[in-house]
Picture 1 (tube, rainbow, N blue to C red):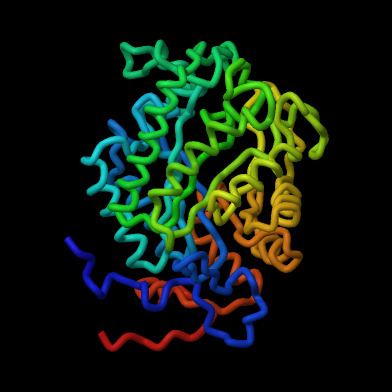
Picture 2: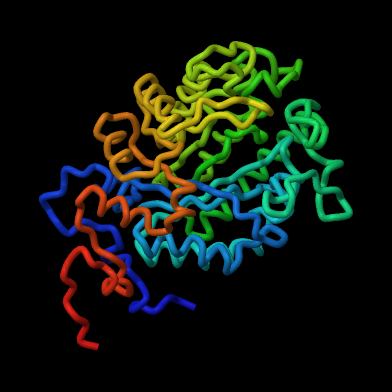
Length: 396
């Protein structure tokens, strides 16, 4: 059922600035990638909710994601979505491996669009970190009798993430090619559901990161060893998806900029994964048509002490943007509008990707605007709550 026009805000989305004198706010200025324009540069980063059955998106996700759209998020990237059942982190992750999953996804996508947000999705495969329980249900390996697939976890090599995760089986080349097609098929389904922004997950110790990093990849064939070889399979997958994704729609890749094997942010890890290899990877991604690099880090090694703190991953976005000449998304404990604004003003990123702060405050986009002194519209249905300006009383 189509959303009634009275319930839509797409013609004048929430968080659109009123005051033309505030055009100097980059955070609240529109941004266009390919044919898609977001009305601000704040992105809801993908966050697993562990709330699906059999991979199907449901009303929880509509309420969860819809709240961000109603309160002005420019773009919303739906959580890591498995391209096959064993590609999920947990049995309750989203999936897009069968056609039946298109219609419920389209329902959510249509609502996000109706509120003026750009709907995106992150396609993923958990690799050696699959078949785990959700954090709130006990983060442990889930066996087959409880709906897991702990005996069928796959990776680049047979090296487990840690003693609490399954020992993976190394994929054969034939299996890798079959799996590549599953990424392609999932992307086609995403397009049919109306997704406007595609993101491929190659970060945080999941399958594509398992191939990129020598800390996980011990293969001795053409997909392991040298940096060129370790990049090969992720690039093959991403190019295959890029080839079927509409040319006029944005195409993102999320990567881990470093495994943080050493504490210093820019320390070298020649045989593992570091910022210098991430730069080379990003150069290759640009060549095959990737539009934006979402610059995260870590997740591939256990018991790592991260140099975490406010804006701690922004330097990765800055260096990849400058060294590669590609648009980037900055992420990592960005909790204030002033932080996002300064990142953009200093040309350290093109998009500001925010995750947990949205869980604390679904109206973060409106909160940040108030902090910056930018007068913005609220959703029609919520205007009476906007105390920052006089709102004409409804005639109804």
